[in-house]
Length: 146
Image (tube, rainbow, N blue to C red):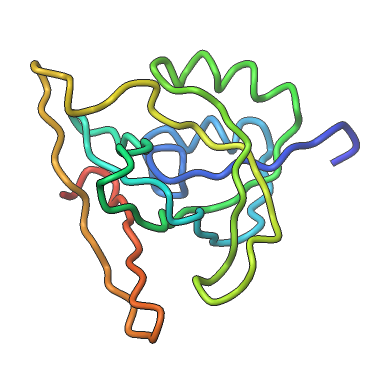
């Protein structure tokens, strides 16, 4: 890519196979790899769309699994308009729960508490436990199949 680029962490409909992935392809996005967030988030489904959010301090949190893509910086303006109700933030990422968080990318975090939505109560996403000494869990959204 010859222009300024940014990394974007995708965990839902913009991922490969997702119903909005054509947006990423339309900006000639380059797949960097699979990554995990810090274990400070949770994810629920809101009417067919994933909502990554920061739970209250006393709630359980998870690593969220997703894909990192490199895109032209100007693509973020368009994606910001698509991701209405989400805030774009910079987040630390890793490829494994056992190594340091040494990479960062933008991601879209749900701007509200999903459990305050009366009309569309959220559903929890599939939890995949990692069999390791760390006893961490990863959550992954399976494009509308939950």
